[in-house]
Amino acid sequence: NKQVLFKNYVEGFPKESDMVVTDASTIRLKVPADAPNSVLLKNLYLSCDPVMRIRMRKPGDETSSYFTPYAPGSPLSGHGVGEVVDSGHPDFKEGELVWGITKWEHYTLITQPESLHKIQHADVPLSYYTGILGMPGMTAYAGFNEVCSPKKGEYVFISAASGAVGQLVGQLAKLLGCYVVGSAGSKEKVDLLKNKLNFDEAFNYKEEHDLTAALKRYFPEGIDIYFENVGGKFLDAVLLNMRVHGRIAVCGMISQYNLEKPEGVTNLMCLVYKRIHLQGFTVRDYYHLYPKYLDYILPCIREGKVIYLEDIAEGLENGPSALVGLFSGRNVGKQLVSISHQ
Ligand code: NDP
Image (cartoon, rainbow, N blue to C red):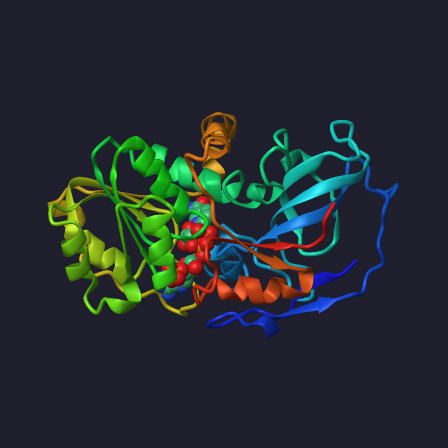
């Protein structure tokens, strides 16, 4: 049973050497007698998520009350897709497929399987349950529909737009009839947004010296909805370009995760002048909508109305590099790791 262990608390950018792949523990193919109600999972896909960097921080700051920090010497944990290989729980049977929180290893004993979601639809790629049909998909759906209160014809801007969450927010907005612009960090990503994912416009923020001016160019009449994934100077530039009664869903602020102190926002008074609704949210509060979301999104996937880009690393030993790559934008689409085929 190979594992990816977390070595020690991280400052600055995470590095591959902050994790180590070991071959230490022996494979247990049965639920042990002293862990009744548990299930043993064979992990198939592991998700690389920006929040995993937040969990690498030393406990004690504000974030540790929301996201349990990783313990040095323990395997990383996060979302994944797995197959039940043994079950001591009456609701789970051998051979069932599930997604939810698991560990970065080949086999994981899940002591509270009630938190897992059973996979009922296996006619779509299983890896999608780390992305569009899993946590990032729910984040896009709830963040856009529940937090942004979108209306047809509105002007929508999305940062980190080609990523796991952003690419779906843009397509949901297009299906509703909004005008959608996304920003991303390379020409390849900008081309994908415009030519494959149906965004109206996209730009490479790394080539813009003045983000405020760039947004003015793409939104001469202002932005109604900003889906915030990046934070820092993005939020500041967006505030100046918002329309009166605009809405900002604060999903995440990846540009801040590797900094010791967050960068300041100078244009916050725009919230007042323009009566902007700025709301932070976490997907945890919205899982009750998952069945409704599946009813909506599965036909869209099957009919090709929504496309989902994935970036799949092969093998547990390539997990650390894939995870670290999120913070330099190396991933094109949802980053995940395929660790064993059924
Ligand atoms: P992505 O798949 O978008 O991967 C991260 C991307 O962020 C990179 O590919 C890179 O793209 C971009 N990025 C990295 N560093 C910077 C930087 N300094 N400045 C600007 N862009 C940067 O990740 P997700 O879609 O999974 O997550 C997007 C956001 O949503 C994150 O902030 C995450 O924390 C948040 N989130 C929040 C949830 C919630 O419940 N509120 C749930 C899930 C995610 P590029 O090449 O474009 O720079």
